[in-house]
Every structure is written in C-alpha cells, then in structure tokens.
Amino acid sequence: MSRNHRVSLALLVWYVAVSVWTARQPADPQFWLLASILPAVFVVVLIATYRRFPLSQTSYALITVFLTLHTVGVHYTYAEVPAGAWLQQAMHFNRNHFDRLVHFSFGFLFAYPLEELFRLTGGIRGWLLYYLPVMTVLGLSGLWEIIESWVARMVHPELGVTYLGSQGDIWDAQKDMAAALYGALLCMGVLAVLRVWRRLRPELAPDVMVAD
Amino acid sequence: MAAGARKPGDQDAPPRRLALGLALWYAAVWVWGAIDPNDRQDWLLENLLAIAAVAGLWLTRRRFAFSSASYVLITAFLTLHAIGAHYTYAEVPFGFWLKDWLGLSRNPFDRLVHFGFGALLVYPLREIHVRLAGVQGFWSYYFPASSILALSGLFEIIEAIVAILVSPELGTLYLGTQGDEWDAQKDMAAAFTGAVLTMAWVRLRAAAGRSTGSP
Image 1 (cartoon, rainbow over the protein chains, first blue to last red):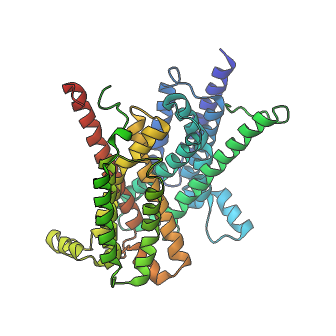
Image 2 (image 1 turned 90 degrees about the horizontal axis):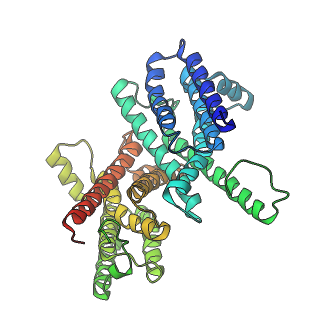
Image 3 (image 1 turned 45 degrees about the vertical axis):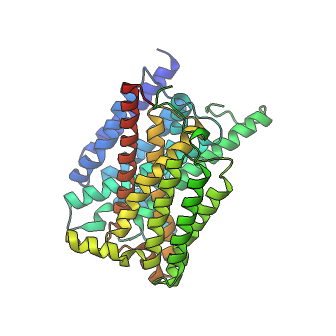
C-alpha cells in the first residue's frame, strides 16, 4: 500500500470515527439526521471516484477538516457547540459564532479542492483558476441557504428563521454567505502568493503540498 | 464542428443596426424611467449597477463582442430592471395586476426579475466562460448557472450591507422584502431556476442540432 493510500485511508477512518462518536446521542436527532445526509452522500462520492479521479492528499485533508467541523456542529446543533459558547464568553459576542466559523471554513477549505478539480478536469488556466472556485463556493453557499430555508419551512414551519440557527438575526443568510466568500478569497489569495513566491524564490518558499 | 461545441464567437457579433437599435431602445426606456420616478433616491440606487453594466458593455464592445442573442437578452433584462427602478419594485403596476390575477399575497415583480436575471443573463455568461476560459461540455453549462447563483448571493450580501449602512427605511424599500423573512432565499432560488432552465434549453438545442446535423 502506497503512502498516499495510507493517508487517504487514515482520513476516512478518522471521519468514520468522528461520525460514530457524534451519532451517539446527538442533541437534536432529527437535525442530526437531516444535516448528515449531504456529507454522507459527499463522502460516498469521494470514495466512488477515488480510483478514477484521485484528488491530492492536501485536498482530502482539507475536506476532512471541514467534515469534522460540520459533524461537531451537527452533534451539538450549531448554536450550542461548547467551543463556540466558550468563544462567545471569552470575546463577549452576542451569539455563538461556531456556525459562522464553519461557513468561513467551508470557503477556506473547499476552494483548493475545487481549484484542483477545475484545473485537472476543466482545463482551466490563468486568473479564472482563482476566480471560478470563489464563485463556486459562493454559489454553493447560496444553494445551501436555499435548501436550509426549504427544510426549515417543511420541518418546522412554526419556528421560521429561528430553526436555521440564525439566532434571531434577519441577515443571517447573507452573513453566512459572506463568511464563505471571505474564506474562499483568503484561500485563493494564499494560493496565489504561494505560487508567485515559489516562482520567484523557490529556495525560500515554504514546502506546502500544493500544485504549482 | 458540432453545434454544441461551437464557440459563440465574433462571427455572431451583432450587426451595427441591431446594436444601435438596442442602444436606442434602452436609452428611451431609461429616459422614461428617469422622468418622475416614484422614489428618486431608490431610483438612483437601483441605477448605479445598471449604469455600470451599460458602461462596461460599451467599453468592452470591441475587445469582447457578445453574440446578437446575448445583447438582446441583456437589453431585455435591463429593460425589466429599469421598469422596476422607475416604480420601485414593490409598486410596479404589472406586478399588482399579476398579484390580483394569481391571488398572491405580494407584488411578485421583483421575484420575476430575479428569475429573469438568471434566465436571461446566464446565456451571455456562458459565452464569457466558453470564450475566455475555453470551458467545454458539462462545465460550460455548470459554471454559468453556478455563477448566476453566486452573483445572486453577492447581490443579497450587498443589499444587506446597503440596508444596514445607508438607511434602514430605504433599505427595506430597496430590498423589497415586503415583510418576507425568506425573501433572500426565494430570490436566489428564482434566479437559479431561471439559469438552470435556460442552460437545459441550450443543452437540448445543442443535442438536437447534433442529431440532425444542422448547426
């Protein structure tokens, strides 16, 4: 078994372990079920495409970090995650910001895997390679907010926006999308700087596993 | 080359007469909209982006000429937007007529224009992606639809910022939520639906063109 396969397998085992832990006594079983469907489908797709279209180890690692964060949020329900509550107290926020953090992470952690996908299958070059992942993240965030609103109206019509973990903020959807957008912009910015740095001063550039 | 793979290129660039006609049409609509709008401030706010878009199209007309179809679609969208800006979206007469006719609880004109944004502008957007990025196949339908959804989200974000910063009263007018807490999501869904429908139609037409062998 090559090193790459071992890393992929380790990431998968990690994700399954985290999932099993969170599947036991989630704070809100119905929410847990609903919010676990998409990640489960996504992981199955990643496994199914692993042989034909393997992503880089960096991409798999980034995706695993994101899925772990999401799984934690789903276990406690986002508005009640202890780490977020601690942050709220420490920084005197008026709400638990764990969900916003995960929206930001979605942008930051998914932009590179998307860039890789477009670079390898779409044959995209130049500045569009940085632009399209950002737009895709923003589009997916919008899609997520749309789906979330449908689920909320179907499952708990009486709760309205409170179901979404908007915690009473009427601009919650917009702020979530903006957080993802900033995350994606930051990731693409870092990637661009890294590539320019490598080209100009290869001996000083940090040894990060991203493609040139 | 098959119809689906054909790059919409300069050979499709609009004849001067069509370009002039569209420009005159939009200028006429714009002047009509500028005369005594329902709310001058809102009209101004709504027109900032529209003017920027027209200026952008004018400046890039040689470097990146869209096809005739694209210019017609863009003009159609800008016309709808000019009407919405003139009356303010929540007060457009045609919307009230639709509301009575369909028994709706709100004036649906803004939702219609969000749908129009996706349905009409996804086609020119596809031209940009195909010609600038050289995307083909599935991606050439996916990226434009995804971009429409992303731009819709970006609008909702900008609208929220404007509403929070500028003035809460004008904000709600500009936003035109008409008291619906899901307004942002419904607007984005309308635009995305429009974009997906147009892309599906373009894809089907390309497939039909291939099977009959005609361009």
